[in-house]
Length: 439
Ligand code: 5AD
Ligand code: SF4
Image (cartoon, rainbow, N blue to C red):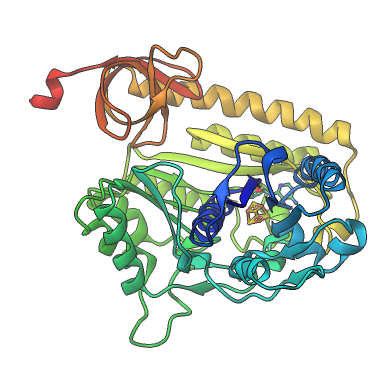
């Protein structure tokens, strides 16, 4: 049996795409190798969101090159956003790569592997949904659903619109059928994936038009799906109906990821985010009004070109004001082909690093403060496995998307009720309450 090894970088969309790649390779009769050195087919699903993602990946590619020189019959394939952003240049820079393909061309990997062609091939059209391919899930009880691909935004720092193309949504009926299949297969938590889920459905033909809030209700109605999550939303497109869905639909989890990027309206404009600080804070106020206990998380970029100390201070102010449950913080990284990479006022690294330290301090303090509201409460945890730090305890996530480590007996893939005894900025700790499950 031929064997493959796949390494995944980047976001949840890439994790999803990799599960589809695995499903497709299974159906071609390939088996998975535990080590890269044991594989006939060495695959990478790459990311290009920041320079660090590129650098990390290129080191892995070096190992693949060495393995190929030991055994030239090995096939090396590179998929995903990094590949898409370089296109044919992949083969100029890395001549040992046999097949390169973008995120919309995963299905072509099968074509390449089953053809007799020995020449290097690149596939970079925006063409298909990986969501149509067979899937092999990492966990039986959790599943991804790709509701759309591509992104019509023009955020000036972001490489994704050029790597994933224009936005295309999958019809709601197809997605409901997929949710039903997943539920029948034992999945109880689904995560709906799109580059901007809030604009889902706008491109569907007349008669099939469905809003994101309507899609949430349709998936919520599927028997057996206990939890619905989604990523990523865009503050400019999140509407009241979606916020209401968090309050009204039992399956939709009380967690909204609302990427801020910057607290300064001037910087937001230069980022082409199409909202300002006030509009963003209006969205936060709406969430707090309709779903008071909702977790709010965010993404923030520090050191965007031209960001002044006063503008950075506005980002800190917003973080203080909102009190995020957690935040992903990034140092601005100029990306090839993006508008922001060409802007004047690129900041020196020490300035970016120093701002980052101050930002992380505020984010962590506010997250720790916010997390104290869970102490003394009993939360519902979907058990994912043993605790990473103490294997005698269990680990899972609650509906607010907090990681919970606890003493308990519930099996992996089942729901436990855990009384929270302490909280840090990132995790909750507690003990399972068996009686509350009966009562
Ligand atoms: N530099 C730094 N961070 C970036 N992000 C996207 N592009 C860049 C970049 N060029 C961040 C944004 C986005 C998250 C997925 O990655 O915060 O929301
Ligand atoms: Fe990376 Fe963005 Fe592509 Fe995801 S969509 S793999 S984060 S570049």
